[in-house]
Length: 215
Ligand code: DX5
Ligand code: ZN
Image 1 (tube, rainbow, N blue to C red):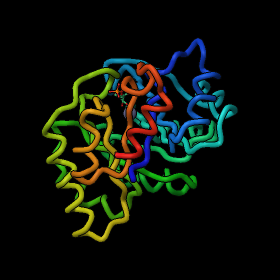
Image 2 (tube, rainbow, N blue to C red):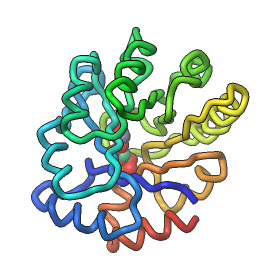
Image 3 (cartoon, rainbow, N blue to C red):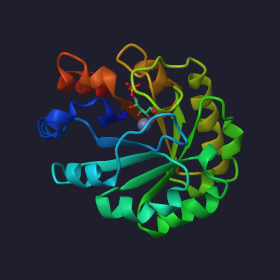
Image 4 (cartoon, rainbow, N blue to C red):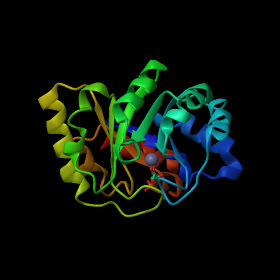
């Protein structure tokens, strides 16, 4: 059974409290929180002050996806804001190993995300040190994009890499996931599904989460 991590990027920010209430009552496992800096990605979302507010509304696990340069400058602040896990981008971090050690030393889970054009082989020398691989199935920066089919192949490759290296990393997939393609993504080896628009824009978000979990 996959874990479901709704992306708050697609939530109604005027009614954040009721969106959190809905997620709390739902079978959603994690809160997926997308932080964008307008530098690594061409968009700006929200930061630690919003995450701190959301933290008051739930006890669920905070899966923070940092689409930012220089994550080492902010790791501690995200921890203080309530993050349980920080995922940073391979493409944004020339000192990836050091950054992962920092996140772990702060007591959080550590993940590495790869963009659609980044080969899985780039994870070879970090896979044993991380808790999570995040395969981007769209180009990061915006919600509501179309799933890139080649991502399925990448999920299989990460799964192979994990078993070859006896890593305990989980596989999370992010971007363009809906009830239509989720079964194929799980079948390929995904442990955690991130979904924004397909959950929050659906007629009955709780039911959509439940159906995704049952796949
Ligand atoms: C994109 C973000 C995603 C996004 C997913 O850069 O990392 O988490 O919110 O949104 P959907 O599910 O709408 O593609
Ligand atoms: Zn994300």
